[in-house]
Length: 197
Image 1 (cartoon, rainbow, N blue to C red):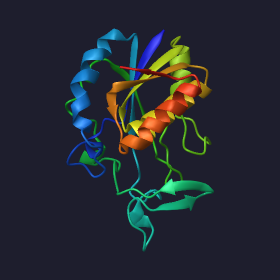
Image 2 (image 1 turned 180 degrees about the vertical axis):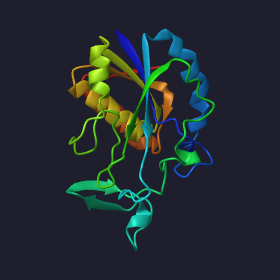
Image 3 (image 1 turned 90 degrees about the vertical axis):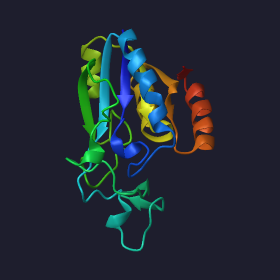
């Protein structure tokens, strides 16, 4: 059974948001169109506490997009984004949520970032999404949303590692860094992942 995973289509990742993905708004109509083709649709939502250590504001003297080590892992420092209960953390109103059966929140632990919809970056805590999908009989997942080179990519990689057949829907995602995303796609395909439209 196939499931669609819609990753982080939140206001802060769209034009005008705190961490906008270029042209991120242009994929919404397509995501809405394809949902009816799937047996199951789930979504993820970045849901950070205000003191999240991935925020540059938590590290005096640092600026957004600096890289540090946080709890032994490399960490890009981001502008404050998707802070719990803020407008920026909300799913965009242009997303049709009618078919979404479950939303899995991530990034709630202030000490570690969580790009993937399945685990935090250290794979110490699971969101429960893998168990939910497997309980529903899902064996193949198609991943879309934002951003292609971070949360979509990490979610897709973890899906492969968990035994799912995984496909990144290229037409339904946008990257922060286009060149980086091209390299990511090649690596993902070498690992057995698929790139679809």
